[in-house]
Length: 146
Image (cartoon, rainbow, N blue to C red):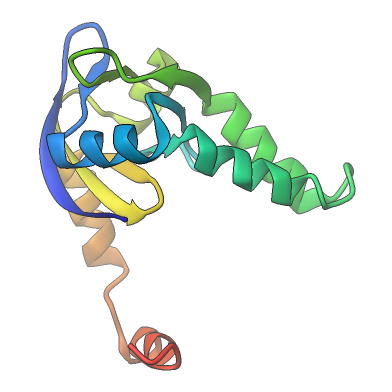
């Protein structure tokens, strides 16, 4: 699983140097191909291509005109591009998505079990403050036996 938080850097060409622990897991378990996208444009999601293809297979089960399917695909296709980790563990973030998410220079890269999220650090900290973990969240997690 992809877990934890690491600081990384996006270079002047828009390439993210994926933290070693994440890069090693992705390459050993899925290969170098990834899908780089976003749902909101606030952050970057990096899916190992096999994980993204699994999502596509589940979406294909919905009717083609399903509004939620369309909304999801509108966003993930608009911001998305297939890419590959290069020999130095870098992946290109599309300029449109880099600008929308405000990810330049130092960023935070978080593991979300099956994919990575890349955030501009202040934006992520503001997100945490705006939506604190509360008793309702704790109850939902407790129902899972965690």
